[in-house]
Image (cartoon, rainbow, N blue to C red):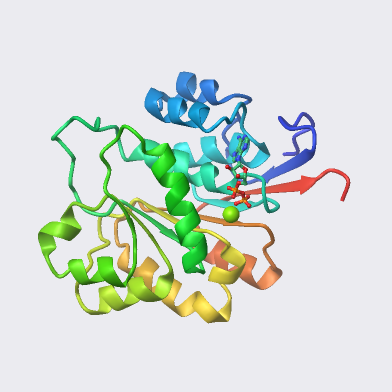
Amino acid sequence: AEEDDPPMPRHRVTTKGNNVPEHVETFEALRERYNIPSRLLQNIAQSGYKRPTGIQSHGIPILLEHRDLAAISPTGTGKTLSYLLPVMSALGAPAASSKSNPGSGVRALILAPTRELAHQIHNECLKLAQGRKWKIVLFSKATAATLADKKVREKIDLIISTPLRLVASLQAGNLELNNVRHIVLDEADRMLDAEFLEQVQEVIAACTHPEVQKAVFSATLPANAEKVAMSMLRDPIRVVVGLKDT
Ligand code: ADP
Ligand code: MG
């Protein structure tokens, strides 16, 4: 279906797939429809975001309904929040003051091609996580070293990483990903390119939970990468955002 009434006038949004969830015009509508934690919305408002961008307005409902997604939207259109909000909503809402962290191990995984990008995603994630006590780990050599202790890794809720270091920990037997419910590939054109593909596939293979949700986000998705993406995704929805005058 084509959307003739995009939420941001600059953007034209096209969606393709089975039973595509209806997009939202406001962040508040997400609360009405999906009952996402109000603290997340507060943190979004705190960031000064007034209304969802095109990819957020379409992508967030799709991910909240636990569908697989291939999202193609230009640089600077807010792809990060499009996946962070649903993922963090799904983590549940232990208050910072609560001692009852579910602690069922890593439940979400965000992969990015560079340390720099992983770092930016982590920052955005921390803003959104304010007031919550999720254990969010920006994977590094130092954090990898702490994982030899099973108790440490069982406390982690969400990991942001480049693929290589994650693969190293998996191979060392220092990381279980069998409870992961959400995998996101950011800058998927690079993640699915020859440089990273094998590592990405190894990580995905370690995420053995039958209900794992997969999403890929990119500014562009060349035909090759798109083919690989579609073979990884289950009953995917494809969302493409184009700048109107390009
Ligand atoms: P992309 O990954 O698509 O290149 P980012 O997620 O890095 O885009 O977001 C680009 C910029 O837009 C960031 O500075 C981010 O804080 C900001 N941003 C994201 N969502 C919104 C929104 N709904 N309203 C206003 N600014 C936003
Ligand atoms: Mg980005």
